[in-house]
Image 1: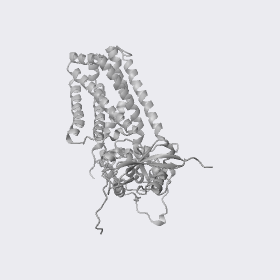
Image 2: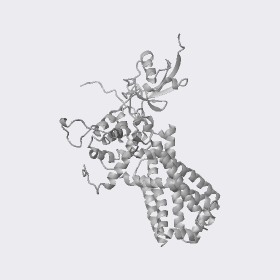
Image 3: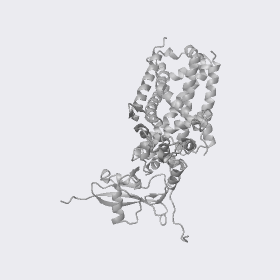
Image 4: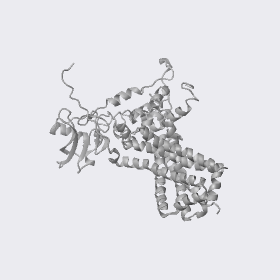
Amino acid sequence: MKRANDPIFWALFGAGGMLAALVGAALVFVTGIAAPLGMLVSQDLMRYQRVLGFAQHWLGKAIVFAVIVLFLWHAALRIFHMLHDFGIHAGTGVKLVCFGLPLLSTIAAAYWLLGLGF
Amino acid sequence: MAESTKTIEIEVLRYRPEQDQEPFYQTYSVPFADDWSVLQGLQYIKDDLDSSLSFRWSCRMAICGSCGMMIAGVPKLGCRTFLRNYYPGKVRVGPLNHFPIERDLVVEIDDFIAKLERIKPYIIPKQPRRLDEGEYLQTPQQLEQFRQFSACINCTLCYAACPQYGLDPEFMGPGILALLHRYNADSRDGAREERMELVNAEEGVWGCTAVGYCSEVCPKQVDPANAVNQNKVNSAKDYFLRFVTPRGAGK
Amino acid sequence: MSTQTDKRRPYVRPMDGWWKKDPYFLRYMAMEATSVLVAVYAVILLVGLARLSQGEAAYNGWLAALKSPLSVAFHGLILLVFAYHTWSWFKVMPKTMPMIFLGGKKLPQAAITWTGVVVAVAVNLLVLCMLVRVQP
């Protein structure tokens, strides 16, 4: 029987899901509610210079990359399975969208992060 | 002192291939005593109301696994589900989901039986053992590793619960993968590598999406979801480490 | 060999709408659907990263969009979804683990779930604290 390649995507799904469970809520709250409203944190928290400095640091790059990329790969496998559960068959088109988009995003994120310099 | 008999309406999905184009529901009024199971209700129908009703049953005590059926939309054993819990409403009884209907409540489980054989559901010793070497010794903890998975009675309620099996019948399914794990987890067995090919396939553990309903409906608390999903980790390890630790090494 | 025609005609029932037919399946679909908003949030961040690399003006545009009431409300929804994700994630996690024995007794799956949820709440709070304490 043919060996399935699922482990790659499942490992990414697992890593993304775990990260989302451990830090997702806090990040959503801060970036989407607290900082924009100036609640608990200053509205200044996400100002350009500070975020740029963060993203120029190697650790900042790693964190931004991990959060964006792993969240997307987590969603990729789940959405792929959901489409199958809804009866949409796993043709090449579906696979291209579900896994191609996260792949493009991964490359784009790496490109933009590296482009910011150190 | 006579008790007044209660009557419950049992709505059964009928299908006689020689005369019916499609399945249809037929309702029967069944007088019942408080301790009657759904199976007993069906037996009353067959004995007294409609001898054409077909259904599988045997032990009447939740050990043979024959009387699996959909009761109010949930996969259950007919002998272990009680009419009193549905009274005074109607109780809808149908054949197990995700299997082709043979006749009335009888489903075709040929696929399940064929798959049972494919997983090598028997101890394949690590080394040949002579009679004079005596029996295998196992600690209670070694027994615990596989005991719950050996409780499976092949009732296939988990297959009726599993939407992935319903969507893709090539999927090995929860019960059989749990049985496969039962052997892999047994310290007496040495055939884990032989079974890995099946585990690693799309039809193996990767057909599962962790819905978990299989474990919910299992009448013996086998927890097939655990058996299957734990083997996703094993399969992933096998996938990533296969070039580092070739098959057969360290056996 | 019988000359009778085989009267067997197994009936295969369709799977359409299977997930609507039981509350268990609806909860499963809800759990799976959390991934959509996880992806949306990641895309919001990705756009932010793109804007960051385009310079201050572009980035400030993204920041301004985050301040809109619609965005804040939407993030409120995303937050609820992430909370549900955290809970459902640790409910399923014990299924992927082999038996764990502590002092000779098997660790119940609920214990793994609760430990996971407690750790997740703690880590989220830790991240929140770290961000709150960032000097202006």
